Image 1 (cartoon, protein in one colour):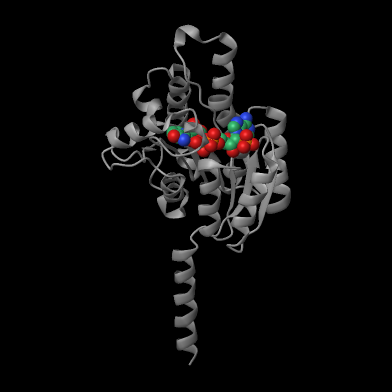
Image 2 (tube, protein in one colour):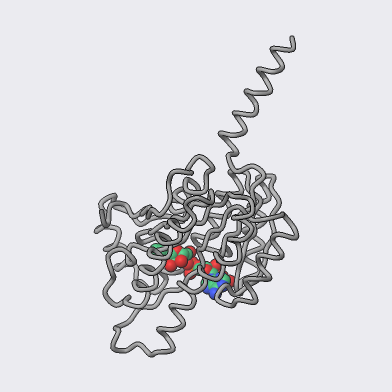
Length: 266
Ligand code: NAP
């Protein structure tokens, strides 16, 4: 009889580990009020992680994302913070620690796009892209690292872009910022190699979110046609890649760039 219960307990534990592999962990997802960040937050919650849904302006949308996450029986907090501001980032990480304990997963997702010729770009525009896309991951990473180092465990996942790998015409500053994210990822992965902390980047192709809102229906159709799988990506396509990198079992994957792009670049 006792053997039967032991078997059942271990069976349930392994079932839980396979269906809720992030049980008990705490994830911060920056820019999670909509788009890719929202899908990442929901995916991590489904996998069992407590989630901090960060947003900059859109409180109502962040609350809707949090409500969807809570359906997965995890604890969820929305925190307003401009992640390109050091004081806001400190408050974000302190609030997380006070509610859930040390964060074990950080997804640096918040980002902004800019389209236009380099010749037309002002110095202020250049600085603001770099601050939002490259300085923010630096600030957030620096704020969570002491917690992760203390526990000798962590998963840091940075959102880059195919343009950070290949360069995009009329997106020079955006491409440079996302290329910088890849270099940050690779260098920090080496620095953190012995600390139980993995650092990886996800470099999506064209994903249907507000970020592509400036494109016409014809432009979007053309992009889909140019993509070997014949469609644009969804936020969930990216969330799946993030979730893989967040798993405890992905401990031998670090310093890598995973690019969900439908074969657009190989
Ligand atoms: P999106 O729909 O425009 O959403 C951007 C999110 O980032 C929003 O939640 C926004 O918050 C937040 N945000 C922006 N600046 C912030 C700041 N300083 N502090 C806090 N939150 C901030 O963008 P997305 O398409 O989901 O893109 C997410 C990430 O994937 C970005 O890093 C982007 O570069 C990258 N990416 C996107 C694509 C694509 O085709 N969509 C392709 C490759 C890479 P509010 O709602 O409060 O403003």
